[in-house]
Length: 268
Image 1 (cartoon, rainbow, N blue to C red):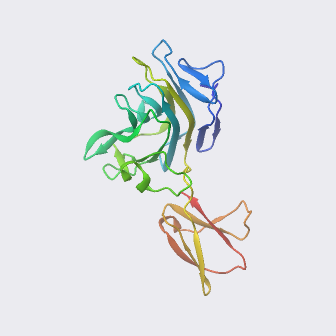
Image 2 (cartoon, helix red, strand yellow):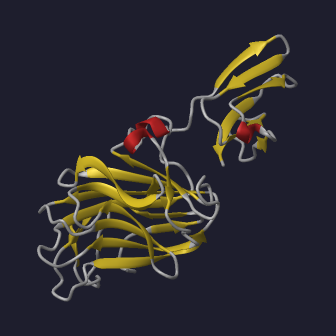
């Protein structure tokens, strides 16, 4: 899939304004600045891309802009793979007509989570994968699924589908590849796919950092843990110092030791 326009940097894989050159995989054709998946005639309407680095720890965010144009019930979207096979599909699962994720546990049973948002409507799909964070099995992952979230707001599970996170029904291992495209058979989905993003950085706005001063201390507060507070004496500096231990906090008091000091939040 080397003909796809993309940017690969450390910890991030992006296909923005997706377009395809003359040498494209079967069933993948250009459609302006989008990819369109159509019947290739040989049962293949998808493409695999190996990531620059594998993911098996921490948090991974995946997102895709997708649109099912002919209401086909076949699968479509963005899939995560390790070296042995597919681990999860972010898109429309086979037999469904809404945006879904699969291979999660509800009440101990493997199931597909349906968003209730029709896949005939263009939508931005966002998946958060927290490796080895499942409360069911420490080797499994925890996932959170959003459809058309407001990315100008801080991340919140309350805006996710069903306002909750789910355990996966298996160990994802190391995610090394992604697949974009759609299943074939009758009828083959006519689907637009665009704005594919795989990153360790949240697409949501960072939480607001509130600062007040009391006597000789700065009082700092933010709405969610999982962020490390940093400080610097220069706003434009490339070097910010972590304030140890703040990744599990949402508030802290710090002594004022300099005439001017700046603070920011860094996502873990």
